[in-house]
Length: 357
Length: 283
Image: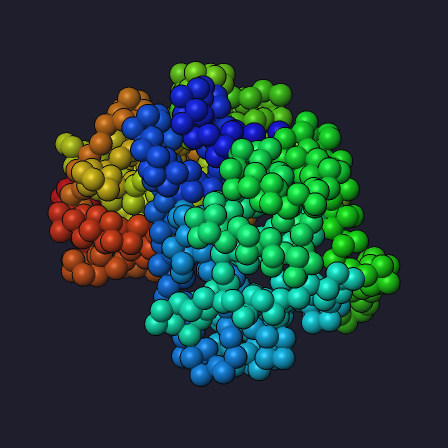
């Protein structure tokens, strides 16, 4: 089980702290580091007043992680400050997504949460304009093959990642929350129309309900599994935030409007199984006519909690499923053939005399 | 599988290990009581995995911490790669101390800190001073307690490279230099065992008293020792720190306190004898 100790901790911190053996703490520290959740567990311990009950070593590593997370958050504010003038003149909405959005709203999920880039969503029609403006602000696209670049521009939901030449900051500039190569059409206009202003800033953030929907779509309609534990822990905190802001009904309405009910319902079902999330129970109760997808949900639980061989097999199925969802079959077939062909072509070119790498 | 744990205070490392050679090599470098079988009753700070995996044409050793891959290596270079792997864990993940890339030694309770980038002769000078009776705290990482300002030892074998190996062997024939490996990314690397005094004081902190920025320069005719202002010392220490930027305000306060309590100098030398004599006069 990849992150069994982590899941047990986040499901019931007090119980875990009471029962954990030294061996389990060792594994826990390792898993937390791996998933970037060291600072996060520290803030949970602090909020639940459990810091005095954990071994000193665990507390010290938690503090270490919290220091790093705090530094990242300062860097985020500093970077957003740099970007303000660029977006202040925009006459279209510019939304922060994921980690940056959680942090600027000071949501519980953001305390100690690490992130590697700043995600920004702009209307599709403005993507090139914003990208060109970012070039003038010192951002450049990372080096990649022509094939990968075309893939980003034609089939994904974002521009290739943009990195500042000096500060190293990476911006993922999105025009959608889901790849355009997919047969699934997700209407994201509600994200813009219900976006919340950040006081004193040119940026906006999606409503909490939309933040949850985005995270659920990201988890259930794609193939990524490398931060699975962190993703479900994020979802757990986000759903409690949606409940806190009394947006559970709104979230269900929006999920229907955006045609992403399956992601939301599946997420809630999994959150009940893993964390006994009360808000998730309410959502499933409200959405009586809409059932979760047992196969999909169990696949996810197997990846999180299953024995290594079963978890590995589940990951392979998830990978295939994710790709088949995010690409129309014609695109998927083309991509499956063209991507290896492009790699092979580059390999042969390197063998040609006079080639400079 | 010969899993083991290394207890080098203030950090312990649990190692999942597929190499019998590594176990035997580390037994040469560390005292027997510091390498034990994993004890389920202890919490380990870091976990390192040394595993053989298929990688293209062969099955080299992969050194990683969980999913975080560090290096791949063949069996011949496993020892240095493992030692660097432990340093990498500490430099990347610990922020409970202000960590400066520096050698640290102690005499009479007072610590001499020698921060420098690789190639400045820091480890050579450190090894020489240890052979001359100073207590080694670390040849790689100066750990500053954020609350008390004390310098916390992190005693490990002293990593010596290239010409310094012959120099030390020639100068101190009784010195124990083990596991000499050639052809690494840093050239030939060998490990000098810490003195008995250093191992026995591995949990005994010291008070920072001197900061010397060493610079070995073969073309130097005469040794120069020049005083460094507090402001300059602060900036050089910050630039040599692994986590000054992460610690923010705490890092600033910690480094300010350290800078104010030490005398700082720049030492440019070509002859180790001269350097030693100058340091003995100064400290």
